[in-house]
Length: 320
Image (cartoon, one colour):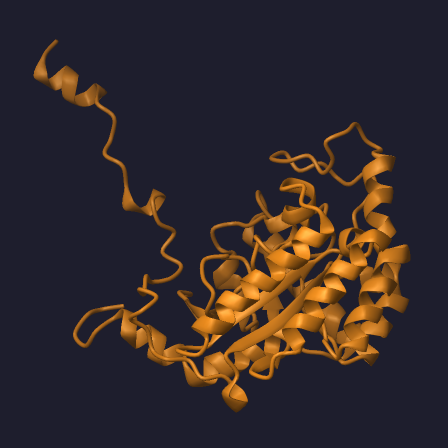
């Protein structure tokens, strides 16, 4: 084999673009600007109920089927619909009794399907941020115009039904394109929950605007806990308390964020509710906890720390 032939058949060298999406900089945990939350709080604590609508037989995305069983999948549809019919009310009552406002990760089609739930949350001063239109409609494979239309529909629908400006984004069923972060920032949103990479907020690199990554823990997510790790409710309460204890201790040095992502069809099951209530009572029983919404935490971080974190990642003379 000639040198020319050998060279032309060799695999091309890997590119860094495939190894790192470049959405944020690395900052060592112990070498960051110090965060101080309002009133000396160590932990900014928020609860993120995913209030969702799953279609029984949605249009098929070429990259992913909505259901693991043949359509129409009555079993899985009804299992999730339990959350809207029964689980939501139980979850809401526990949070309301303890003064914990939710930050709703909302499939905006819920505004048409179940406006009563939307009104209940809005009347309690809960925040609404977007989780796409339906949780059975995925972003991957969309062109730019289609993705813009999804984001704009979320902006318009949440404004129409709640009066709120849309500030946050969690992609439907955690599906993305390579332009998602740029588009949500360009279209006026201020934070995303899609990066799962830290216990403090951080700047997201976008072409236009200012975007904050908010901690949204998959480890504390009841889908992962109950349906993936098959944890028992009493153990879930213990997990949440242990998570909080560590973040509360670390927050004495620099403020941390704890998020509990929930799904009413899971946490709202009667035998699971007491564990959730126990954990909420424990967390809110500490005096140096800022019980807030995602919007409030992201806004405070953006106003006080976004630039400091950006500069810390790029010393003087180093290009961002």
